[in-house]
Image 1: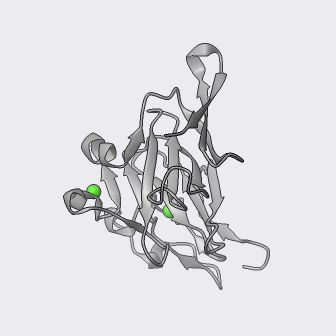
Image 2: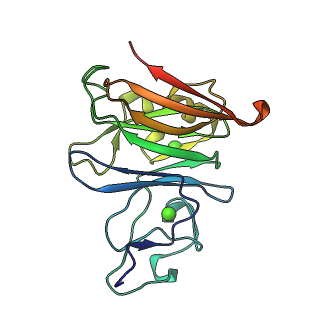
Length: 190
Ligand SMILES: [Ca+2]
Ligand SMILES: [Ca+2]
């Protein structure tokens, strides 16, 4: 691997470091069928352009991938089907919105203008879902109904950036193509 940190990454518009583990995560835009949220450890092979989304949803085995010595393929932590243009990912590094949100994950998209929220598992390597969210336990949001279960906010023009502000609240930057690219900054408070 030498100078390469990772490869097989497609159209990534989001990078974030988990403040509790120091591990890098990314988001990736698929060509059509899947967008991804990934844990990107050193030597990460995300699998493009052999596949997007998990191996189980593609008729392909890990042996079909380009494999450099010292690399490892990992399935996405979570995928969106179909592709909807995921953008930024942010670990909300604040307790200002309550313990539920502290150090958990926000992700935005550009096509729907949705803000997604995920709670991390104890090892901070995946997401946890409730008893009434069994159709998310395959780690894929398949279609509108499952997408709505991970959607916390909607109606943004298109989210391009998410940050924890110096005041401890969540900030969202949007891009509005119909307003000639005029952006807005939103602050999410109580
Ligand atoms: Ca991938
Ligand atoms: Ca599913």
